[in-house]
Length: 156
Image 1: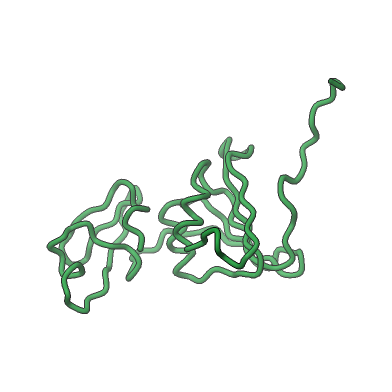
Image 2: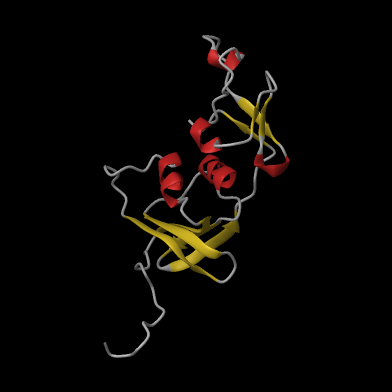
């Protein structure tokens, strides 16, 4: 052993164009990939760092996606499971835009109601809809069912 401490440095390379999702709760990066529909067959170059040191939260995850910018709906999905995340849009290796995710007041069409009797789970052409409540809970606008745990399980 040389007796030297490893230097702090980049764990993953910078990207030329794309999105960096930072300050994801430690251990949640793979969930973020799942709700974005990113699988092993995706065409984008993906870099994931999990449980890296953070001055603010102690541990965090980071996801870098080359050549892809997230839609508003995708950012809303991330906000539901990683409310402290930041989204950095990268263009030509520079941060073009940086924003903190915000939990939306309502979500439509991408969360499935767990109540099998809810009209959104019938054959009726009704899109799901939820109001967000304190503590990150979701309340169905049709049957008032509350989702308080494992929200990611209900994201379509």
